[in-house]
Amino acid sequence: MDYVQSLLAENEVIVIQTRQHWMVWAKSFLLNAILLIAIVALAVSVTFALVPLAGMAVACLAILPIGSFVRSYLIWWNEEYLVTNRRVIQAEGIVNKHVIDSSLEKVNDVVLDQSFLGRILDYGDIEILTASEGGVNKLDKIAAPVKFKTEMLNQKETLGMDEPLAARGDRRGDIPVLIAELDALRARGILTDAEFQQKKAELLSRI
Image (tube, rainbow, N blue to C red):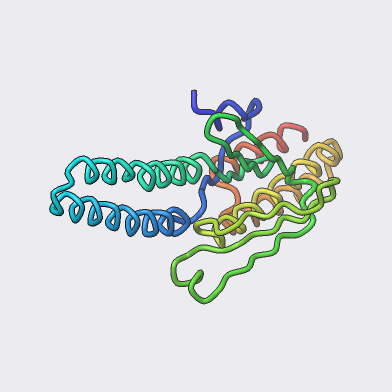
């Protein structure tokens, strides 16, 4: 089982999953590629200078930029950001894992920062302001930040609909209002047709 999947509670589903933008590891790739080329050029130069053993020793240094890039890539690959129907999850770590959860019901505000280049390449920073002790959870240079933020707010609003259904569903006069609210969410694309029909059936069964 994937590590992220193991974090999910019963009936919890992933709505959107992303990572930091590819440019994060691309910088490491570029710097280490330049260093690798320099090492190879130096090794060839030393070898042609009739010092083959020294050339081989210099060539062995190529493992340093290669190892550095592999490490950077693995760190990037294992840092994931998810929005589920209940919370926002940030998981990181290659071997030792570190997970930060932000419950959607405790999210007070979401701040998105995108530079001009970020809008072109589709990356940005998101700050999640919560009512918990941590206060702020910042996601740096994530890919598709606008979509991530939108899905987060959509799920928060959908989560909020569960409370009126439970609290007011037993009062028959509120049921038509709740159905109208659900229909408005369906029209906005927050609820699917299947989800709308299911919740509508639940409400009508209480009449």
